[in-house]
Length: 203
Image 1: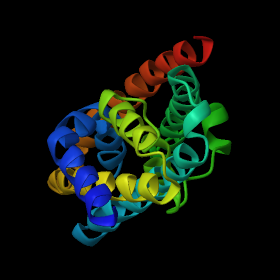
Image 2: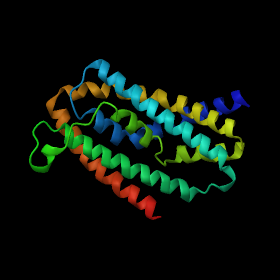
Image 3: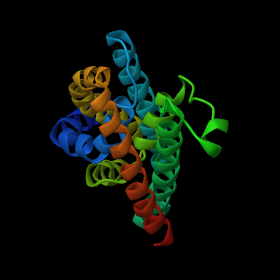
Image 4: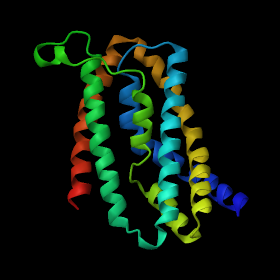
């Protein structure tokens, strides 16, 4: 069961990883373009985002295995909606904190600390997209706590390969025009995901 569960998760992640990346790209790309960073910092951020996503996947896998018989799709939409609201607010907050010249109330906003990518990864890991819901459905069918956790572990491994595609994006943050575009995109993305999250929660 171990090999089957992990293997199924990896195949699911590989086959749907680009879709997952596309659904989270507006958030992650906007975050990475927000400020100038060194090559090592870009790699560290991707690693932290991946670790956050791993924590989210393992948690969802555990909860799915524990409550498989009682879970409903509407519940996960609402949980995902709350996650989207939180990540959109966090993205907006971090974007404002990265602006070099701040005025008015923005001056009292401290710069977001380095732990933020981990939180971004965790919250985007609960993004309710079709591949994520498909993984949940598969985990429910397994009807096993261990099997469910292993499936989501494999799902993480499969989808994480596509995160590597975002490392070159961080290089663009060295250019001021790219940072400006990234910040504008971040604000627009945060507002869009905030509305989507509210829609999910409201049902």
